[in-house]
Image (cartoon, rainbow, N blue to C red):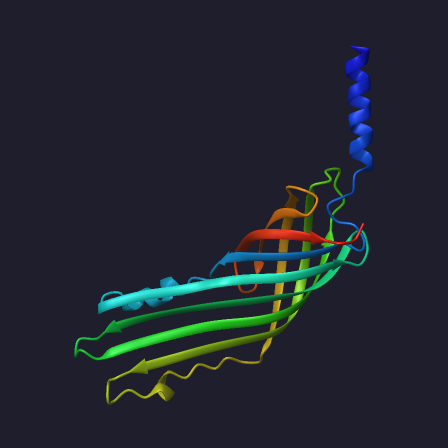
Length: 196
C-alpha cells in the first residue's frame, strides 16, 4: 500500500510541474472547418426547378494566437466560404447564384485556469474586415442582375466565440469553437509553437 501511495504522490507532483496547455509566450496555429449558416437551405427554394444543383465550401478557418499572459491571448483569424446553386427554369433558361464570404479578424481570448495540462477552455471576441460577394448569372435575355442587387453594408465584421483545445501531445491537439460570426461551430487541429 505504501508503494502505491508513493507512486501516486510522485505522479501527482509530476502532473503539477507539467506545463499548462496555455502559458505566456506560447504560440498556436489552428486550421479548421465549420458548419455554415444555412445557405443550402436558403437556395433549396429553387430545388423544384430542373437540373438543380447545390455546391458549397467552408467556412474554412486558419488562425494564429499568441499567449500575452497565462490567461489572455491575442491573434488573427482568416476564414472563407462559398456557396451556390444552379438550375433551369420552366422556359429552359439557365440560372446560377454564388455567395461568398472572406474575413480577416483580430481576436482576443480569455483562457480559464484548469487543473488539466492538456485542456484549454476559452471565450473571446473578434473584430475586423468582412467581405461578402455574390453573383447572379443567366442566359435569359430579360435577366438583369441589378434587379437582384443586395445591400451588403459596411465591411466591418465581428465574432463572439467560446471554445476549447485539447492537446494530444506537447505540440499537437484538436480544437472546437461555437459562437456568432461566420460559422455556428468550427473544429480542427491546433499546433503549439515555441514558448515555454
